[in-house]
Length: 418
Image: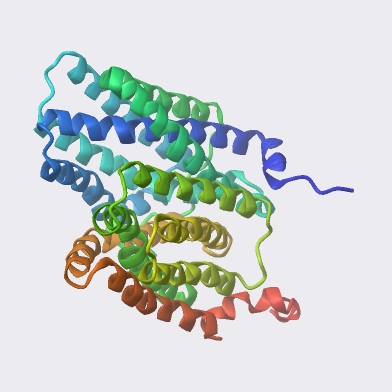
């Protein structure tokens, strides 16, 4: 009998289907808002790039700062209720912004406040969605579910949403932002239709600070977790995040291509990422989860070396086309591994530490990357940092101690002995 695609199997389950539908719609709205907000900030500030950067920082800073607190909250209350609060709050915030735009009373400081508040609820959403997923999805379908999210993000949020957002924003930014508010409302509705979920089991005597410390202690004593998070922190900060800034700069200022090619570069990464997500959704967890994850992520570092010899667009495009699916293939294994190996009552806090370390140095690293690239050149930057970021991954692949977590999967007799 022919085996059905895992995504098709997911759709047979009511709860995952509702979550998938709501998140896909929300990702579309995020894509619309990505373009609309950029244009809105530029129009409000008379096209100040510096103020656009401050707005981006206003959204990202609370996300990073409050992730650990968000993780502790996620492990205290029903994850479904918290997702409802996150989506509902962001819908209200976006609707409020629409009112300010429509009444021509929007000021830059209000955009900054909007960015900060939005970032706070993002800090709740990210660990919450990671902890909520294994509560409603069968374990054998977790890889498929974890692949559907980046698939929806690439297609709905990275391709369709921005295209629609550009068209709507050219007509009216208030209309474009209204669409984003509506998609949050639809995602809220999908969550509302889902069955209630209980609060996680926890030590009621613990304070919020105790809970945060417990999550950090768990990550610190779990070798496969903390080694990967430290290595990913470096890879994200110095290769993946700078890729989205330095490659457009390289195309425009070093190779002297037209702006059109920057869009083509982004679209190519989105298409290859969507293909990677489809592949990830149809594959079961490998037995050697840590090693396979790091093989995928190490290929990202290797793809950076191509920029050292790239002389035209078709050579530059290789890096995002290779890196995008490798990010998703590795992330799918990693998220599924965390959801099955980390105790449910700690999953929210472990996920928040994951996000905190993965994103923590990215703002600073991006500034350093820009300065380094300006000093040594983009080509040299990607060659040097690609090699540096490759080393931790190769160490993890080779380490027997880090890969001990997968020993029972390779030798089932070890499970029977326990």
